[in-house]
Length: 408
Image (cartoon, rainbow, N blue to C red; front, side, top):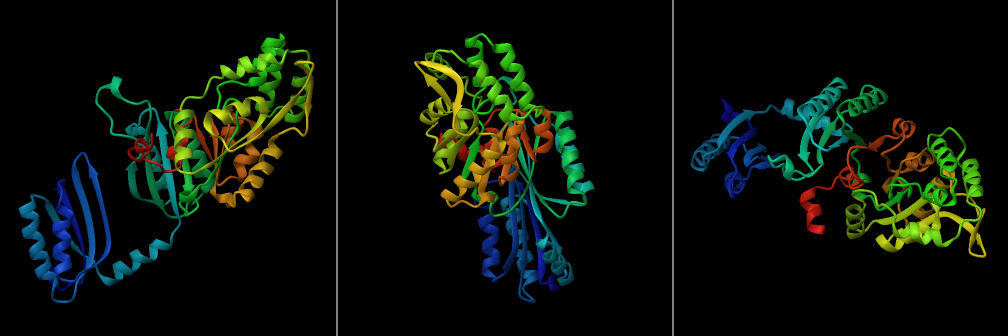
């Protein structure tokens, strides 16, 4: 008989309303039951509540009777399932398994996307413990929808082949136009404190050196070198020297005009506002130029800017630069340096960039994100965002719209 079992799983479902959880748990409290596990979800105003409790021998029958009467009174469905001590011990032993967070992000979410990701997880022998929506509720009218949707999976287990799993996610991402982040669920993920951005084609939707080159009449030459460097086809330092030399003689006043008209990347304003609100330290680590980095520093309240300094004589660019080039290796060094200065563990850092010269910092950061990246970068980086704006970073950090909207 069920009444003799000391461990019982109770599942409650029905229309959600205030007081349901309180009324049912008060019955357990009256009988001094011990709650071993509890979880609750509300989907479209429908409650799903699970309670695993342990009762004193002989009390189970009275508890179940009271819960049945109360559930009838509350107009909710209730089911009971006795759990043996052996089953419970086995379940407890599973808690030591690795835990991961899979975040999916796109302009809209479809059943194909959810099914594809769930199948990859199952094929790797892993189990989905929890699914939660990070973006706001979706209106039926297409015109009223925000162009972003995000859902987070909590997954338990050890992948059979982690590299193959990442590859499967990458292929699914390209096929179904969805971004997929796969992260270990550790305390560091919940305590990110430093974020470092590339500038050109990341925080801004242009390559400033190309803008300068257009004004200098050497646009096509410089653009070709820039694209080759971002694809990783030529050394960044070499390409930088070649491009700077082509800018010789350009009037420095052009830099102010370009700075005042920089095209800020979609979602950057929202992202920066939230990051400052929650206490992140923010850095620009750029292979571009300090003049434009400092302009963004003033605009967004950025804490650190490291970029390249153009040499100026008599109000004109000389075609040379001052100091060491901020290339990929230097970006990684600066990320480590700033984390040490701020007393932040490297696992609490985030790096975001689009080019091959961003890969060194993306690879050492706790969370490295390739943003609207070149194919080589996207293939190498563990996480990438291509479907929406820069504020997609917030969902990879685990933030929900319901919390974010309170900060705006």
